[in-house]
Image (cartoon, rainbow, N blue to C red):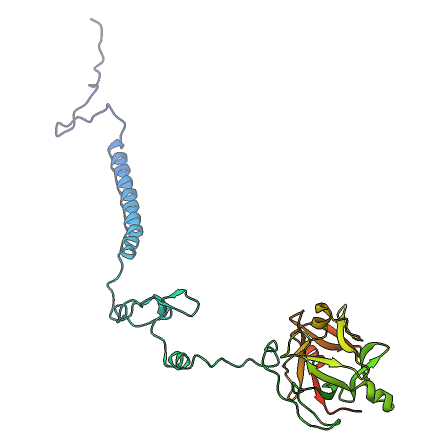
Amino acid sequence: MPETTPQPPPHPPWENGWVPDTSRAPGTRRLWLAGTLAIATVVACITAIAVSRTTPDQASATPPPPTDAALDHGPGLLSFASPTATGPATPAKDKSGMLTTSPTPSSSATASAAAPGTTPKASPSSAKPSKSTPPKGSSGGSGGSGGSTQQSPTHRSVRSVNYPDRYWHVSDGYVKLDPVRGSESREDSTFTVVKGLANSSCYSFRTSDGKYLRHRNFVLRADRSDGSSLFHQDATFCARTSAYSGAVMLESVNYPGRFLRHQNFQLKLVSYQNSDLYRADSAFRLVDPLA
């Protein structure tokens, strides 16, 4: 008989009768448990982050309840946007006819409305000369200051404010600002002031030989009247308020806004300029005659 060697059983049973499962690799259950735990941890972290981000936004989106200060209807920094206790203002028409919705005027505004004839005085150093009635003349001497002339014909000399030793003087047919030099210079620096040829409320200046001071090409000169309307307008000047006491500014009738002033001691008709030099150069005092 052939000899047979006994072989151990392929799957020896354990003592308790449990046979291990050899169809899968050992440790697979632990890997599944570890993977599931890791996934659960990641999901929990993501959920916590999402909740922490959305909670403040939702809280800030809800406005807080108004406080007592917020319910106060009194005026704030922008008082015109705050409601008033008396309701909306009633539209009213101002002097220009336009509707306004301003609230009840203050006491100062009421005082101004009570005196509609009063107007604020403008500073003489910055405002344009007003078209007021020229003041009456004075009888100051040739060395003292004098006001503007009267409407009746009278003899006057015209002295500069910023050059008090110089007067209007007719030289070679032009009017210049010169110092006094002898009797002939005094005669040429003395004029008869009459009612304006083009406007009786203004002035015209006549020389001793019957000529009139008129502007031509905006330069003041002495010409004989030709009786034309243009000559009358060129020879008429209206006295306006000056920034200097006792002095006047002379505005052209046919060129409103242009005043007589001296430049390089030559009398010219120049548009008004808001400067101290212009106001000084265009201010003159009509004083007692030199001749």
